[in-house]
Image (tube, rainbow, N blue to C red; front, side, top):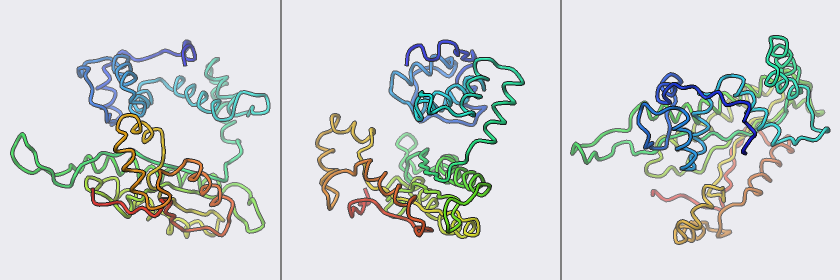
Length: 304
């Protein structure tokens, strides 16, 4: 996206490691750059390595508020399009503050956001975790070491806590809106768990248990919100042909074939459209509530 951010390049000169520590953020990608490396140096390395998630993590804490809002505006434009029919007061007000920052423009942006129409459908997928066995052999010291509580807390925050945060904030907006049908329904929240919630493999203690926690949110939250007409469900996808998985097709064709063959039927990875189809049906069907769906071609994950 060359040129899109030419007017908004206020990257701080502080070392990236300092900002990451202040924001309590850890990157998953091993860095070649020294601890004293600037934000720009680390961003360049992450971009070169294709570590887009870590790149966004660093940018989210390094950019000043105005630049962060502009990134959000760009993302919104990519979703809704730039046509006149897609203009919204809140997006226009946010962009006005970005280009002409003032107290008046800021207050207008905040007011527009508060009065924006509330969405009645929320779909959320959280994935920030670390991999490791509960106990692993430390070759350097010749003894066992345990998966740290800090690593577990990182995954719990990135998967389970974030799922609660998004679901509860969405429900708050829905609760203050008018019902959308004769049943008094005000909205639907669908969280994304994983088949690992039930078939957690070796090394997935964090991921599997936190995704199981996402499933655990569903029924009590659906009951909490029943008098408000807000439904809560979750989907546990199996192996899907996401961009990350599709990259394996060229890197390791043998592993790709094995993954496809491991699905009972159909013998292939799931298509994103099939996941979307289930999400749409959950949103459309008001009688689906408090349920966790497996969408996996009947696969049951082996221990490893």
